[in-house]
Amino acid sequence: MKRVHQIRRTIAAAITLVIAAVTLYSNADLWQPALPQVTQQSSSATGQAVDALDSLAVKGRAPKTGYARTQYGNGWQEFDGCDTRNITLHRDLVNVAVNDKCQVTSGTLHDPYTGKTIQFKRGAGTSADVQIDHVVALGDTWQKGAQQLTAVERERLANDPLELLAVDGPANQQKSDGDAATWLPPNKAFRCQYVARQIAVKKKYRLWVTQAEKDAMNRVLSVCPGQVLPSER
Image (cartoon, rainbow, N blue to C red):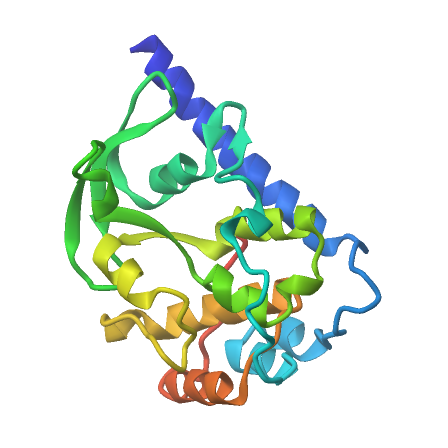
C-alpha cells in the first residue's frame, strides 16, 4: 500500500513536470525560421477560441509522404518511471487504482466523446476499451505543419497533456486521422470544448488549418461564441 501511495505521488509530480516542461518549451524561441509565424495578440487578449482560430494560417494539406508514428518518438515518454499513457489515464479517470509499476489498473471514465460511462480494467482484452487520443490526430499534424518541426519538437507535441485525452476506444478508432471537417465527437455537448482544444494545440505548435476545417470549427463555435481555450493540461 505504501508503494502504491508513492506511485500516486509520482504520477501527480509527473503531471506537473510534463505541464511545466511543455509550457516552458512552448514559450521558448526554439522554432525554425521556416515555420509560419502566427499572430497571438487577439487570442491572448480575449482567450476565446474564435479569435485563436482566426489567428491560424489557412492552407491546403501537405502530402502525407514520410508519415509514421515513429516521427513523433518511440511510443510514450516516461517521466520518473511513469509513461504518458498512464499519466493521462490517472488524470482523466476517477476512482483510479494504480499498481507498483505506475500502471493504472482500473478506474471510471466519463467519456467526453460519447457521453458514456466506461469501467476501465487493465488487461489484454480490456485495455483498448479506453484509449489515449491525440486530439489533433498525428496524421493531421503531419500534413499541416509538423513536418517542419524537429523530431524533438514532434515528440513533445505527441506527449503534451493539452493534446491528449482518455476516451472511448471505438470512438477513437472511428476518428482515425480525421480533422474537424470529417469527424466530431458524437456527444454534441462536448464539441465546443473539443474544437477549442484542437485550436489551442494548433496555435501552440504553429500548425495550420484547411478552409474546410476552419469552416467546420466556426460552425461548432457559432453556438458557443464565448468558448475559451483550455488550460495547459
